[in-house]
Amino acid sequence: MNTHNGTLSVRVARIEAMTPEITRFTLVDPDGKHLPAFSGGSHVVVILEDGDKTHRNAYSLMSSPYDSSAYQIAVRRVADGRGGSRYLHERVAEGDLLQILQPANLFPLAKHGRQHLFIAGGVGITPVYSQLEELELKKASFELHLAVRGPGHIALGRELQERYGARVHLYVQGEDERMDISRILFGRPLGSHVYVCGPDSMIDDTIEGARALGWTDSHIHYERFVEQGSSGRPFSVTLARQGVTLEVPAEQSLLEAAEQAGYKVPYLCRGGACGYCETEVLEVDGELDHRDDWLSEEDKLGKRKFMPCVSRANCTRLVVDL
Ligand code: FES
Image 1: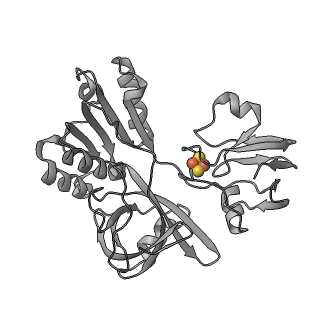
Image 2: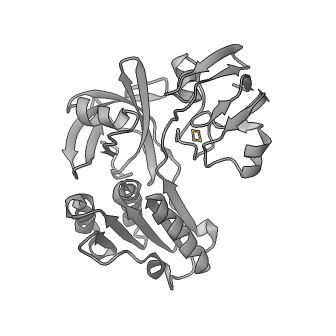
């Protein structure tokens, strides 16, 4: 296995257009060795050197957790995004080498769930792929409800229907009835777990619908698409442990600016969701622009904590414990 500083070198073995926007990449070890094991719902971070920029984008693994010969990721092209998905779609070819970080899981299955219900929309299907595979091999009970935007976006859903038959319910916009989340959740046996990944409205409706039916929060799991990085007004920050002051430019997050300057900051999601980059604020003389979903409202008002992967500052002096 080709590892260097926690990164893996992988070769792009296959590129397939799955829908007008989503392309699937199959990644293998360049020497044909096994890749590290992972569990259903895991993601990898793909590191792309793009001129003087480095993109670090997280993508769910959609291959089987029981097959270490290859990883698969699906990448939705985001035309007005920060450039990582465009780079993968336009500049990466079969045979190219890519750098990725070892898999991490922020959306794991509930080990003792009696029944597993999945609700997904669009590219939100990608983490579900490996979860279903894990459940199938464990002979666990599951059902998938997947909404897609139209007949041209159906390929991944059809693939899952071929694998898992009637357990996969597809809702094609304009062709089928709308997905009724409350009906899906109603009357499920005790010990059921629901997992949702898709647009914010789908996640919010699932959480609210489940709570209204008496589900406990520990049985409701979701993964939001998080915008990675951030942009806004430039600001200065002093990294106290390093004894340096950095300028964070308009188009970068503090995390990205620190990495570019050669400093390591812990991270997993790079989108304000996982909590790994939580950093103590030692001094601030103005406002912090919190953009994460991790800190509580109380923490945000307290100005003692900060998530450098997305949050910014409107102040003349900011000192953090990095
Ligand atoms: S890396 Fe996940 S919250 Fe910052």
